[in-house]
Length: 265
Image (cartoon, rainbow, N blue to C red):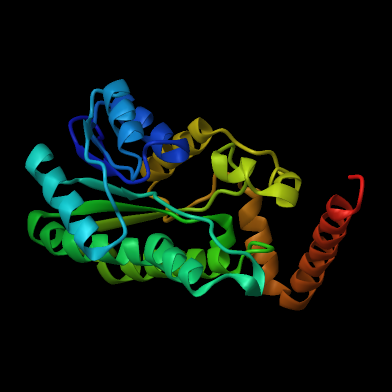
């Protein structure tokens, strides 16, 4: 796909991977709409890339409708939609009902709601591209966070369904599944930070470069950390051994947590 001149919408683009995607698409000559809940961040990034800021909620039905309507008014047509916004809320079985609701809304349903509004027009106009920022947690799991693991699995599953259902009708779907990325989410991950960085934490710019390459290659699954594919294959082939190795990592996390909570530490 030739990106030059295309209309691109990126959600969660005020920081991290989204910001890097905005810069990378703009460098290729795309016309970029920058969305983020943080209005100041959205406007700042839009200024950096000569784009157009549409701050607001990219998860709720009303928010998705408002974003897509505003983007269409500015761009004329949306050629690429990067459903990048995500949240990591709640921990363990103590995760609240609100944590679960927020994670489901942002990490899964945001993609569903955007596709509902985009795909019918793409089918009539000849096609479009839907990019889901999921996570390696959507292929494997995320220790400590059932909310993140479950909803990112949902994001991967929806992206796969969308690709299978509409891939022969002009709708191209890419699913991006990085591991550790140097973002605020990684910085705030506590005892998990070292584990997530085990296979080298990438910069958001490196992830954005992988996304553009994956789009050029026509890849459904885009793995900025290629080793995630090896883990995924091992998990599928030997699920019991995979879970045993993950339980070992969980014990390390538990020990690190106990150590951090010890008096004088």
